[in-house]
Amino acid sequence: MKKMLKMTVSVTWLSSALLILSACAVSPKSERPSWIDTPAHHQAVGSCGTHALGRYKQQECAMSRARLELAARKGVEISAVSVMTESATNLSSQSTLNGKVEQQVNNTIKTRLVDSYHDKAQDIIWVLLEEN
Figure (cartoon, rainbow, N blue to C red):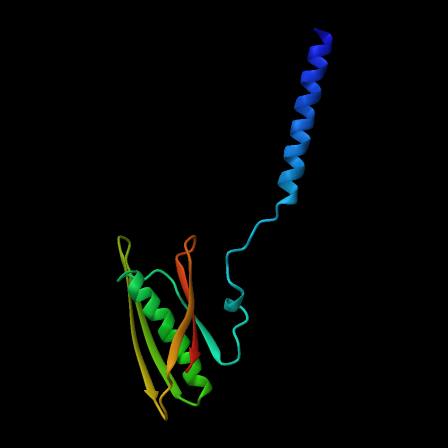
């Protein structure tokens, strides 16, 4: 009986040690692509968080931001004016944001979608565009 108890404790201890060692040996894998932080010189990255009109508009928003980055590199003049108005009472609050963006395009920039990544935890879509 004593011998069987010793053997059970030894097997349990050995199993626990192997489980702990195997858990330590596995490093967590990052799914986030490297191009988000280090795109090539002729590429641009755009991102967009949750969009009220859905996933398609969220991706279009991210692509638009990447195109603006590429356009800015080519000398497109971009100016933006935003006016935010807030009012509050004891029972409610209201915020309004009015924005105006003006662009002067000197040339045409053709792009293509290279890759995209959806961060599901934060609901952010990242896109990688490059000039054609």
